[in-house]
Every structure is written in structure tokens, then in C-alpha cells.
Length: 472
Length: 69
Image (cartoon, rainbow over all chains, first blue to last red; front, top):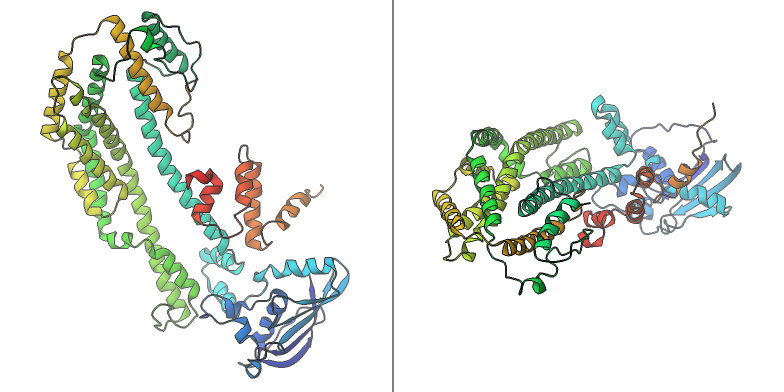
């Protein structure tokens, strides 16, 4: 803490030359309008911080300390405009003087210039909140009780904290979305690995046991541990002739087709149809505010406008406003943004399970649509692949949320499975069923090749999902 | 009853950023983060940029590493 003893103001703001004996006590300045009361506050702030927030703050249209600090008659002589303050520093039991000229406002002169006194002034200079303008105080006094906290934040110049909080929140929201997506991919990959290995539970010991059973059939040495770089099919090239290129493994293809059929059944089921109908109704309700939703970026614009408001006119269009009316006008808009955003979050919660079902169906469909070309004779799975692409676009529209018309259209078609895609799936299933059953050695070899492929896909999933690749 | 020892946290606050109220609050946040298990390294990399009006990209880099940006 410092106590102001004597303040001298020379050719600064509206003051030609003034010395005030403040006596380390509280004081008040009173006088008619335009006699320089605010100039004394400006002088105190200037000498301690090098800044005049009323000039350099928001809504001042680029006024500067250097140009507008000196008295109007000394505008071109910033070197003669100065403020000097003698203070008492109770913690050091010392007096000190700080003097700052407008010309060299970044370099104050401190007497005595000792490190302990320098440190005190340096600390004070970092607290712009030490001076409050009349407008700021009135704004706080007039603030509704519920909004006082925000006003205090403004008074204490905490906008930097709020900006940081908003950025961290945005990153956290994005991470939540990424983790949800990664969990979905993880679930699909672990399901594919589980089906390929035909295991009821996925863990390192079970994978090793399943792989070693097949390796034994091929006369290959068993693995004792499962490492990140373990290749389940290691040694196959020398054990049973050349390693075969990837082909359709009957049992695995059948299980993938079953999964796809299950997913398609889910999309046609009454609960899914009902979820789509409920989400669609919520979207229709929200459509009334779509224009508002689309301009979410205006929130920060309105907040900036609030900060730039000079108490007289709109900072954007110069329309005259009283302080209260302007703030009420913008606060009303911001409150509406808040309300619409809350409703949007609710609708997004309704959409989340629909998106998850569609996404898992897309993955299942894309897993089998590549099988057709590997069969002999080949099965045309173009329609199935096209359906997978349609689901992908649909999911993208639901995730993007705007325009709402695309979400509505998407929800209306989400449960409709194209007939040609279903026929394509039936043809694929029939052809896979016709495949001859492999002998024991071929089956063991195919098992290890497919298992390795699925294990690698599983291990490629980012570690950001807790335990995603943990098979211990 | 004796007053709690705040000498350590006071020292940390004084060294946080420029020392303004906003930076003191941000400094407390970083300090608390550093005390959480497994977050000391992140707190340290945040500390190097957090007082300098960081962008979203630089915050992400400090939180997750450069390769995620």
C-alpha cells in the first residue's frame, strides 16, 4: 500500500499548474462541471501507471496519452506536461517521489531510486483497476443485483480471465466431441476385432489363447505375451507356403453381414423412428429462431459493442442512445442468444443417439461393401456403398446442425433404408453362404491374417480415449 | 488458531504474469493445476504462454503438444 502525500500537476489535461497537499488521508474533490475534477483522477492514474484509461480505454476512438494528455495550450509540448506525486510507503517506512512526463510517459523518475521503492511502484503500475471513472462507478451502482458480479469483473479489469475461460471452454467442448467420436470408432474397432477372434470378451490373454490355438494347428510357436508390435500371423509365410492375399473369410464375412443386418434393423425399429420424430419436432420448434442461431458469432460482436459504448451513441451506427436503453437493448439480445443456445443444446442431446446409430450403421455397411469385389463371381455392392455415403452426408448434416432444413430432411429419411441396398446385402449374403468351408489349416491361416488386420486397426486408435488400446 | 501459511502462494502470485489482478487469478489457476496428479507438465507449458493473451492454437499446443495444432 502507498499513501498519497502531495500531488503536483503541470500543464496536464485541463490543469495549468496545481499542487494538492493530500496528507496521506482520504480526500474528495468537488466543483462545477468542467473545472478539472476528473483531471486530478487522470493525473493520479497517469503518474502511477503511465496510462489514462479514460483516453486509451474502449469507446474513446483512439485518443492517446501523448496527444491528449497535455493541456490544450501545450498540446505540442508534451515535454513540459508532467505529474509528480510524493507518497509514503508504510511497509518501508519511507517517502518517495515519482514524476512522469507526457513525452516520456513510459519512464518515470523515482526518487530515491532504490530497488525496494522501484519494486513498490512497479507493482502499483500493474494495477490499472486502481482508478475508476465516474461512468464505471455509476454503471456498477445501477447494475441489477444479479449482474453485479459481472460488473465487478469489469471494474477489476478481469476481461482477460473471461477471454481465457471462454477459450479453454471452447477447447474442452471440442475435446468432448472428439472423444465421443473416438469412442465410437473404438467401439467399432473393438467389436470388429472381437468378431474376428470370435471372443466373448476382449483382453490380452484371450487374444493370445485364440491366436495360439490356430498357430498350433499350423505348427508355429505360440506367443507368451502380447506386445504392441506382436504379429499374430508371424511365421505364416514359411509354415504353409506363401501368405495368401486378403480374401473373403467365410466365417468372418458372415459375422460382418450379421452385424450390418442388425444395424439396419435398428434403423427401421420403432424406438429409432420415434427418436427421429421427437428430434424433428424439436427442430421445427427451433426453426423459428434459426436466423438468430445462424448469427451466433454476433454474441462477441454485441459484447464488444457493449464495451465500446461511450454512454451517448451506438458505436456501430452512431444512433443516439441513453446509457440504460442501449445496455438494455443489447442485454436483451444477449439473453435471447443464451436462451436459443440452451434450446440448441437440448436438441443436440436428442440428436446424439440418432447420430451414433447412423454412424455405427455406416461403419458396418462400409465394412461389407468391399467384400463384393473379392468374391468370385463378384457381387455388385455399388448400391450398398452409395447407401453408406448417403448416411455419411446425413450424419454430417446432423452434426453441423445448420441449416435446420437439412437436419429435418435428414431425420425424415434416416429410418428409410433403400430397397436396392437391402437387395444388394441379400445378394452378398447368399454368395458368401455359397463359399466352401475351408480346411482346418486354411481356416487357421485366414483366422490369423484377419485377426492381425483387425488388431492393427484397433491399435491405431488414438490413445486419447482412456484405455482405448489397453489389452492387458 | 494460527493463520495459514500463504507465503508460498503469495510468492507465486507475485511472479505470475505482470502481477495484475487478472494475472493473479490466472496464476492461481495454473498453480492449482500443477498440484493435480499428472498435470504438472501441462501447467508448466501453459505458464509459458498463458499471460500473453494466448490464441486458441497456442493454448492447444500447450495442452496437447505442438503436433495437435
